[in-house]
Amino acid sequence: MARCISKFGVISIILCTFSFFLLDFYSKSKCLESCTTVHGKVEVARDVKNNLNKALEKENPLEREKDLEREKQLERQKELEREKQLKRERELEREKQLEREKQLEREKQFEREKELERQKQLEREKELERQKIAEAEHLHKIWLHQRQGAQSRLRFANRYGVWNEHMSSKDILPRLVMVKKSYQSENKYKVKYQGKLGQLLTPQELLCAIKTKVNISTLVTADLPQNADSWSQYLPRKTLQEEVKSLGKCAVVSSAGSIKHSRLGQEIDTHDAVLRFNAAPVLGYQADVGTKTTFRLLNSQLVSRPELKFLEDPLYKEGSLIMWDPAPYNANVEEWHKNPDYKFFERYSEYRRRNPEQMFYVLNPHAAWQLWDIIQQNAPEDINPGPPSSGLLGILLMMNLCDQVNVYEFLPSRRQSDLCHYYERYQDRACTLGAYHPLMYEKNLVKKLNLGDDNSIFHFGRITLPGLRGLQC
Ligand SMILES: *[C@@H]1O[C@H](CO)[C@@H](O)[C@H](O)[C@H]1NC(C)=O
Image 1 (tube, rainbow, N blue to C red):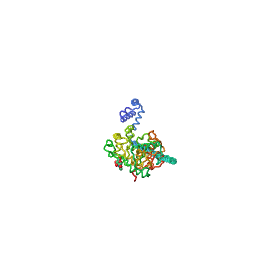
Image 2 (image 1 turned 90 degrees about the vertical axis):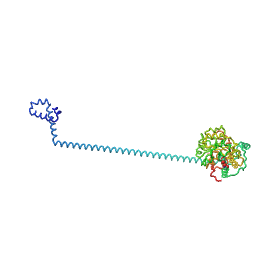
Image 3 (image 1 turned 45 degrees about the vertical axis):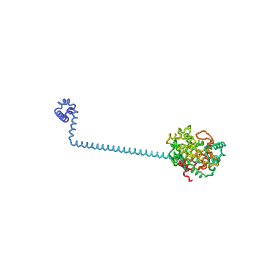
Image 4 (image 1 turned 180 degrees about the vertical axis):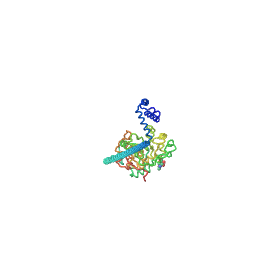
């Protein structure tokens, strides 16, 4: 029977059932055994009958309606299911949206915190700045206080401490008077002063005398005779004054031993231009003498003597160089050229060939003796018959180029000693008061011209002189 079902489908089932009924009907007793053996148990047959009934029922319209109903039900369920799904998706979407919003919120929060942190940092920096200013003000007050103290001490110190403009032979060591006399008797430069001594010139008159009578310009090739061509061709094309035109605040830094431990370096560096002398070094002394070198005034001895290493020493490579050589008293350029103090020509040319880019001027030889005359005119006694010091020539040069000139340690401060140069050990009172140069009388003269106060001399060795350009004479 099962075989029939599987093999012939519903029709064979119908046939089988039918035959079963027939057989059943025909003879229960006769056929029973064979049926049982062929088709299995009776119960199985009953199941088949039920199935058949069900299959038949399907043909029934009522059943079809039920089926339709069920299908609709299913459809509705599916619809519901889809709606649920949609809801879930919407729910998810909303959650994601929320998540994104939260994320944005968090980011905004982070930004706000960063901004706050930044503002706090700014506040801290401002606070630091305020503290710094307060500190500076405090220091300034202390400084003012100290200065007032120093000024009251100075009133006492000034009686003998700071250079006074009436120094003369009777104020100096007998030894130095002797040296001066020996120079006078030798009179190497054939000095023959024709003017008056000790004229009572006002500072203004002195300044005008300097401005109108001292020709402090530098030489150009045309100023020299033809036979000087071998070296004069190396002179700069323009004079120093033409090249520089005008400067504001300038510093002249003397080489005096008293500038040692002065701590003036920073102040000196604030000037527009700084003039130094001869072999005065910067390296190793910056705190006291500053770092800037705009001009260096050299004597011809330094340039001429090979053992002084002028050609090799890197010290001379910074700034513009200006050299001077003492001529005989009132000699013109030609006479000077025949009879210079030092024969610098060859080494000057050599330096120029090696350093063609660096300006290297030679001072008009008239300048020194024109200036000497004014020093003598201002002094009540005969002054030393040697040319003025490089120091005073340098001061004059800068008064010519600048609006204002601060000179350091030309008039000695409270650090005054016999130490000749801040970079050497050699000590001699003559380095302050002069022997060869009329140094004492030079100092009397600049003391008279000083625009600053004694306090500045005492503490900083500083005098302030006016530029000559603006001067009405
Ligand atoms: C000043 O000296 C220069 C040479 O350095 C010369 O050319 C000029 O003529 C002189 N000026 C006066 C007014 O003597």
